[in-house]
Length: 207
Image (cartoon, one colour):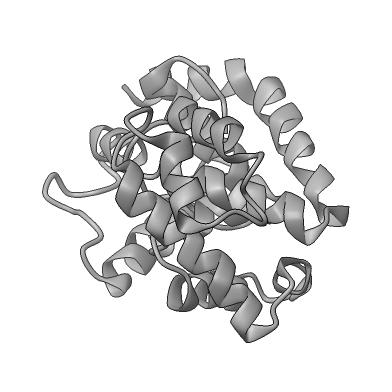
């Protein structure tokens, strides 16, 4: 199993590095562009990247100025949990306004862990996994997205125990640390590793 996965890593490494390079374009993005990516993550969580992309496409005309009802109408019965996720996203838009926060300032903070905790603690629909996903998608490196695909691969590789799951923040940090140790042990880029694990399960690299 381990050799199969390491071979897969090498096979997708160039594509993964190219994808990570694409994410870096957000370093100079506007607040609105970053919020669009935030919307993707809200709708992709526990669903799929395709669902997140569809939601963004449907919401784009009303994303920055529409009402909550506009949000709900735009995605009505077209994505999973359309009402609840619309509520999360609308709350997040208004919360950022209330705090006077431009997402560019969050992104520009040098401490990646401060960035992640700010998102987790202030925005709805964002635990550590979703916060890490958002930050990875806007070019931040060095965080692990501990989702079901990553957990599955890490368990098969013997890095994690069969019943491990990040129910608490401390569990997430412990699993993230184990993943990084595995990357160091095998001389792997931890950001490429994330995409390689995801594609090992799904057969594709999206975001």
